[in-house]
Image (cartoon, rainbow, N blue to C red; front, side, top):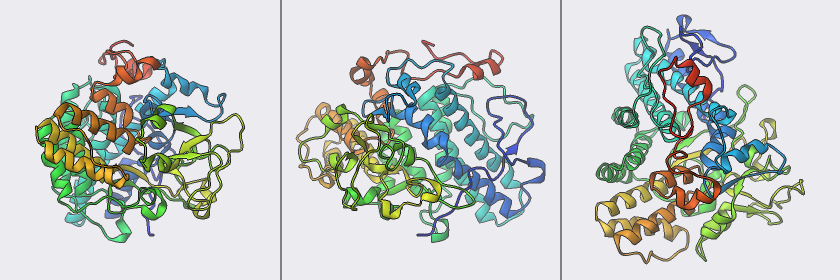
Length: 474
């Protein structure tokens, strides 16, 4: 399978600002004045945005404990004494000075800056106009994704629509509503330009379906159910379908299958290394570090007969369908792991660490069906909601839902999201947006009115020269 290799640090395109939180300098930097002159420069700059998707900040520790451990389907895992600082996310005791709070913030702004470099500079290059417009559209979709991450974790943040002409990055926070509207604008514009498919050489680049799919999810968070329903219907009409095999879906052979709406290429090469997304979650000291493991609460959430339970949870002592005997090498570690990131040893490329070929599935068609079902139910379209909910349940070898009223069906759809998207970093933001966080997370320390959002990091507050206001409770 041919993949596009996306360097983690081809270059850093530095703008003329001082120590602002968005000015994150990489190694091997190239001054922007000497760049953005050729079509190849435009392609390299766009690829540098993609590279962040597989980076440590976006798929390793910061992302996993900001989006993952805060929910009730994932716990720290590993050896109890290893990286015990992650427990602060499990019990909601993190502070404005926490490295994870800061690391995720910095990473997302670094990615926004890469996108803005393309959006501002690529239109000035004399090059093939169709390619130029497409690269800008790719950058706008990716920028929307990064802003979606920021607004869900931190709330309203400053909006930078391209590079500031005066080089001034000191801005007050925009409102949450303004950020969501900005995301909608980016995704709408991107969807109008992006193709639905690419040649094999460009597989992994964002598509029209990806932009529309992410847009439908954004509308769901905005509680604009009519637009979430209409937009998810557009995605459904593009021809996606569920992978018949839940196991195949998450194995390397299932990459970019019929269910893939927005997926990150991960691979290993001498030039660019690999991704640690699977390694940090792999079986402790057999395949990886053993972090971010399934909770007892998640185990208990699956209905009897749901095949997703054993295909989502990898257990000590089991032999996988691919022939690997699962055996941890640390007696103090737990006994279960995330099977969705498992890469059979026969396919592993040890040159870049375990599982570096495992793609990251950001948005799947199953999610689109559940978005459509939830929006349809809120609009009173019970039959459509039941139909699309049952498509997901049928793949899991379950019977049709017994829910028939709007209230019961709402609960059934939310429950289906939990087990279908288990350990895919959707549980915590889902609990927050649906108002269920205190119910499921209160015993862990979640406080209503505070923990819906993370704090703005202390250094970002200080660098704002008083323009930022801190989130409530911090």
